[in-house]
Length: 573
Image (cartoon, rainbow, N blue to C red):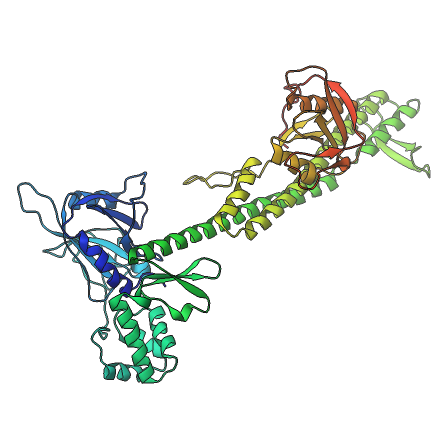
């Protein structure tokens, strides 16, 4: 339950002091909401489909951009004097009459009509004498409503109303007769008595405790008197749920909700409405932000999973580089049997325990020795390609695992603060988590760590901060990858990826060590000691700060800090 007719009824006592004050400014924070600065007061009016309402707020919002509707209102109402504020019957309609400022001619009075009716809510400026609509915050044409159009130049037609009994004038016999027309007490009151929302109608039924007409009459009188007098149970309140979030706001205490919520009372209806809607809007913003983040993370994950599937299929089809080496070796072992111009040769495979024959394809324009060298070149290229594919596959698998972890954390987040922490950690990894407004751009998958490729084709990863160091060493790297760190001082964790568990050449170790020295406090030094060991020998003590680890079975090499030569560059795998 949010803004109902009785909430507006109680609010009127707080709005009457605005009569006689001047309209100083009109602000529009978003498409549904305006704030009128009237004398010393700030009146918020919202036509939001869920949070439509009006109430006073302590201070005006900061508005960064001008909007047409607020500019239009300021032109017609600016410096004008509020001459009347009234609720129309007991409906959710508020009229604010303003006499515009004029030096020479008597200006035509205007009426700002505020309709608080869920998705049909609107704020409409009308010329008082003619009833002509000047402008509205929402334009409604015949395609949206067959009953009335809300467009500039059209005559203002009030929303349709139903004949209902006045709750402050209804008698005992009238109520009892009304109850006899419906099986449910609350529905009879909702459909037959003006001003009642479903929540307040159910409150009467709850307080009655039974469908007995006399009990319902007493409960009805109790609720109406609480609303009219505004004391005791009649103080404005927000019903707070067990999770600490507001469940409802009402002009009276809702005892019917007390099994699951407890009342928090306020001095004014404005304070209660402001507290309720601020909390609800913030929570809805949190839920929306949470859902958007989870969608984006899942989109990243699914994209990577699809690429991973294709990469694995590509790896299966990749040329077997070992057979290329064997064919080259067999050609060299049979140079005396092969002639230039041959297109194939049937040779004994000395690398086969059963010494089976193997057919070797040849380029007729090449000599036997040149054919062997061609096989060795294909072997080296295929070996590098498979190593790169294996590295990228391992990389994608780990990234998918990390994204799964972030998805679980986002789904478990129970507040905006927890969600912000997840987003902040994602930002630290260099992953953009906020959508750019109005921009349609191709998304890049998350790319943690700085990346290089050694001259031998090994991928080298570098953590860019303490969080990335932890992520790289403790989550991303495999146990047989090589881990490096400058000895005895602060620096980045560096990992040589080794998905095929090959022997890492010394040339690659030296390149990775130079990178580790470069991304450390020893960058400007020479002959820097860098320790290296396997990742499986690196551990993080329980409770240790980010980036801190201990390791064993290390060896040390001395290098000068340097990045790989530009022609090898930074790899975009």
